[in-house]
Image (cartoon, rainbow, N blue to C red; front, top):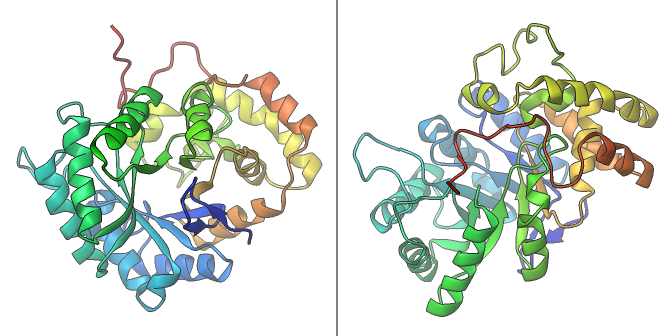
Length: 331
């Protein structure tokens, strides 16, 4: 495993990051521990979870699983989503961040978090308030690096400016959606990260399963798939015939490498030199083994050109598509 620096920072992480969103439900603790142990055995030293994943159960499982190797793991978690019914039980304001950090530390039974993300922008909290609270947690030794997820380029730029002006801890990494059928991050966010040495830890490299090729236009989703289980986010974001058609068109490229489409799509994301690490979120040990196989796939210039012909750089499939969770705010 070739480890890389998180942007311009000294901590080194594996090119694959183990995502723990499935741990607790639908993946029970026994299977989750086996997945974590196999990932560590394969050289993955980077684990990503969040306080909202299965109402904190993912954090608890991860904490117990890595207890005997805590200092060998770069542990990331997040804050922003609702953790209760009260008006201050969510968001990126000072009150919620300070409490949420302590609660995550307790659930994971650790005294520090390596990388702490703001899970999504909070339009009700200023950058100064959010970054000030994070800085206090860094100075208290509870967090080592701070980061953001699902931020637009202008929001990351504002945060970097505020950190410089106020001498706050600065975002070390950003976590964007990035895959073959969703290349929007290439337009402004990734060039910004390259310029300023911000680590990029992308998520959903398989477009929530679409880039496994399991879905086809006009056909019912396979039994056991996220779409068949009624997963809200895949229904909101990925079930587009245009994406299904791209996935089918990609299969000959994967076949030429002698690998499943899932490995080709994951290798394509890892081949972007701006990316630091790519999050995989296996539900089963078999899915993890398939993910690990992508480390041996080398994307050629011809492969890249073929992908560009299907989905041009900086674009996504489906005219008029917008993610309702992150609405366009320019009008």
